[in-house]
Amino acid sequence: MSPMRAISQTRLGGPEVLHEVTLPKPQPGPTEVLVRVHAAGVNPVDAKTRRAAGMLGEPPFVLGWDVSGVVEEVGYGVTLYKPGDEVFGMPLFPREAGGYAEHVVAPARHFARKPGTLDHPHAAALPLVGLTAWQSLVETADVQSGQRVLVHAAAGGVGHVAVQIAKARGAHVIGTASAGKHDFVRRLGADEVVDWADAHVDGGRGGAHPVVRRRGPEPVVQMR
Image (tube, rainbow, N blue to C red; front, side):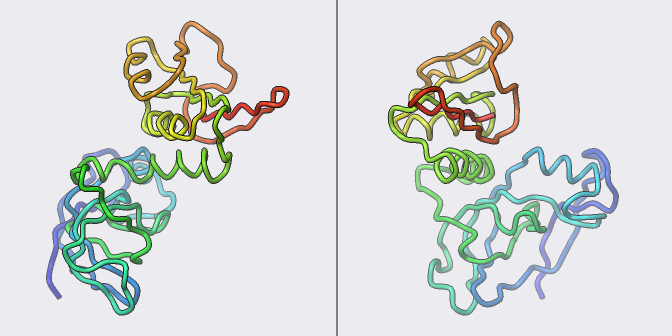
């Protein structure tokens, strides 16, 4: 079995616990693909899992879920992709995916084709925040044209994607952000921007869970 490089840890702690190791390159099983990782995203869940025993238990383990790369091998039954296809995704979450490595293996349906307009680093930064915003606004809240959507932390990871999705759905988008980020949020498509430091906005800061409140006939969807 061929070796591959990975970034692992044998104890919990800060970034200093991460170190390079050599591991066997995984092999794809039925319905799985082997992806050569060109870029891996880093999210707060990575840092939290690195510091304290959580979803992955005690180390050793390899962190990383958001990845972008090229399909290298396909397992039996895979028809979605072929070797050479560029893909990105957030495979196996919340189980260990091992994105901080040269290769990952996961079911083919855990990946999507990488748009040609995105390079690998940008594609690897998208899955977690993109899925969170999409599932919240589209699959859960079913945002419709003409609704008003309040996005807290609109310049943040989930927030800046949520603004664009809500606007694309035809909503009137209000974003909260610090004053220095207002121009950025407006460029994303926000119709109004509120400085959270100067105004009280119901719902607080941070997070990414939608709350649908009804004010008369028109729903107000909050991303917070």
